[in-house]
Length: 305
Length: 250
Figure 1 (cartoon, rainbow over the protein chains, first blue to last red):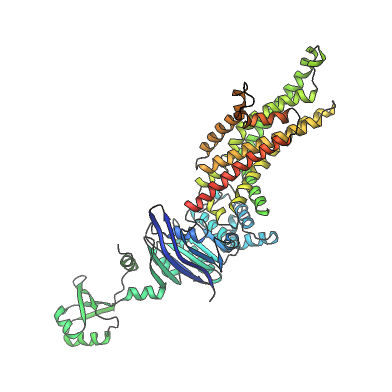
Figure 2 (figure 1 turned 90 degrees about the horizontal axis):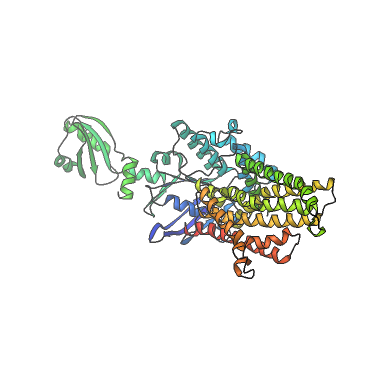
């Protein structure tokens, strides 16, 4: 797979504060990368550096092999960016604004109308083309923001919290749109809505206080969540000692009168043996499932908060 | 070059999609028209009162002085009102990332915005030229005088525009940008008057008025052209540096 973006040891300091510290990652074609982090973790700062809006204190950004500091124009031509505060000239109509966006992104004159139509169609804006941006609802303004980011058919689309402030239906549509964009382009998506990452992204990285604390595929994240716990419902639960005599159990945690969380030592739990034992010992087993830590818990664990 | 044009077009468009552009054009052209009318009206009255031949001046100079004298003064008010939003509004609405992440250099952004405003102001400057040219219908007017004045006024409004764009880049409040650039432009414009007793003092050399006066006498002097061009470039360079600092310092 071809690498479309490569960030090496990005560092950004604002006076004595380090906003982003030694962050390296890359992005392949046709991949959606989720960028997670609590508020003020350095997500937006990283994105501003990737798009050439902010000069990194140290480190390099390469867009399709072009260094953004040495040749900003060619590098920027390959990026579509939607910042957190969507940059819209609200005094213009939707199609006028997109026309400006297309022109400023070097779309050849002949193709401008075509690219405006495609972008509007993708973002579901076609019936809003003659409306003033100022008069559009929040969700539609966000779509205009996304439309301006994809108008020149860039290799990389960078979206900073694209679903903030939208209603659930719009969020669904925008997520679907992002997935569609991700098929042809590379997408970097920052968010603090955790389920969004699982739905939309192929890969995740979590940043906390400027440092990259997790970097891997969605599967890795799920693995991290699944862990070594079982959620077991028993009418006559055994004591921890009795359990430990039979299995490598570390902890027995009571969730309520009947439900228990049993933490095993290793990741591969012999569930079958556990069920057999429970029948033999008459624990009154009525429910058993792997205990999945919520994404929030994983997130909190990773960011040590 | 192409990009400068694109940005300039965007700025011109945005002057005309809001009432601001139309209102200022309307007010300014009405004021010019009124001065023109007064000039023509008074001409015969004043000239018939002038007994000695030395007191008599041509109609071009008489009407031209009235109109161009007021034009330089009116532009002093109009330009800050037009220039104030150029960058500060982008800061306020947080739209600068739109320009910064497009494949355009900061130089192109600033030049585009400057020429956009300049083109808008040029409408008014050319309007005066056309208006005064209508005198030619019944008189034989001195076009050289008109061209020199037009040229001077172009350079003068260009200087005001450069000041305006610089102060607009400093703040995110358009009204503060307007006030600052107005004060600054007025100071530079009238500096010469306060140093009238010392015409060779360097303060009077940096005054815009002193250099504009040459053109209003009908003289196109390279010394004054260079002054205006240096003046405009200085403020454009300062603006570019200010915007570049955004990227570097954050």
